[in-house]
Image (cartoon, rainbow, N blue to C red; front, side, top):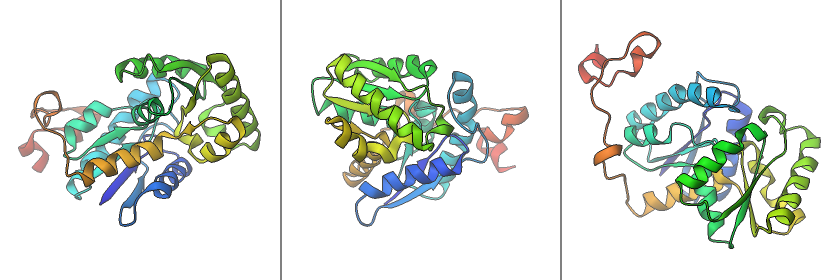
Length: 248
């Protein structure tokens, strides 16, 4: 089984961190491939960043389909391009926010999201509503640490404090980490805070692995059917879904 963990931003160190988190939970025989797109933002911290990350992500989904990949993890908590990726892929595509929230809902009556910047909190709230997790999501808390500064040793202390505050304020039973760049902190935070802390990369990897193991693929009907043939121009010319045009 081949699972590609696609980091929609272009920071290779973050791709490596996410791939390591996926490999830590994958079953023997499951091959995890960490992928960094060749185009897109260095980090995703706004709607603008998210929109411009999607072409690079979809390029990698299309490449994976040509190379026989079984399933994909979108390694960004905004789950950018998830619907479009599912249109292109035959196998399962899982976003890390989707997987983390669903995992947390099995572990208690409610969870808090601890994320990077406050400006991303609205997106997390939207996703909780979309995934039917609104009644479980008791609060969203920001550390005000930019994504590319998560590796700073001081960041760990700030994140621990935010998790403790979230549990106290929201009376939460679990914490969902709102950034793939926090994936390596789960065990440490669980020990420090005393409640389960969920990394979406691990949760999404195991979800993909389970679906593939069960022989399940997308139905291909309706909204997630292959996109209709269409001409694209300018910078998007390479994204044409017209088979004849693509061959030329």
